[in-house]
Length: 248
Ligand SMILES: C[S@@+](CC[C@H](N)C(=O)[O-])C[C@H]1O[C@@H](n2cnc3c(N)ncnc32)[C@H](O)[C@@H]1O
Image (cartoon, rainbow, N blue to C red):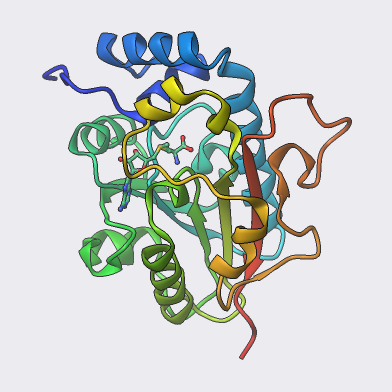
């Protein structure tokens, strides 16, 4: 596999999670970011733990098909590992990450990986969608939208979540997170996230969900979303929620 010359946030997260699927360019970027911000591993461990609790809670409602946007590297407790009885289609726009994901999942008949621009669900290969999320539009599914909202402006995010709401069947569930203004105090780290990166105050999160209704757990720091035991003490960088499409 040809090594990428640009880092990816998804593979930097794999590095922070202690995974094995990143490249020197990702490690260099991760170290530079930590110089500007501080340790990241505990923060991303908590974010991945939230993913696990959220998708297991969705599976507990009877959902056994998941469509994942901005999926990153499909290891280290990612969706198909957290809900091993479900089928999962991972999608992303980064070609290197997609190829890596396809290689990692090549032996799986329950999880696949393909191109998908979250802002245009028509870009997903219908054959892959039918194979791994066969009930899409007809049966409740889990839509996983983590690590992505920060890269979409408000209008695009609202429209995208609304299109997903329309396309998904009633009683589908959405797992989502938002970046807080944590990085505002670290301008060098913030500038590394690029011009498209959006921090938001918590009051801005709920309106962006549009018709999706958060469960009674609300939109809370990810460590406090149905914690198993005492929530970890990490910087409040991400808020998360599971939201539901109404029955009608
Ligand atoms: C911060 S990473 C999060 C990866 C993964 N969800 C996780 O939590 O480990 C963001 C990912 O979103 C992808 N991405 C960015 N814009 C996207 C879009 N419009 N549609 C789908 N994926 C996108 C990037 O390529 C990257 O892999």
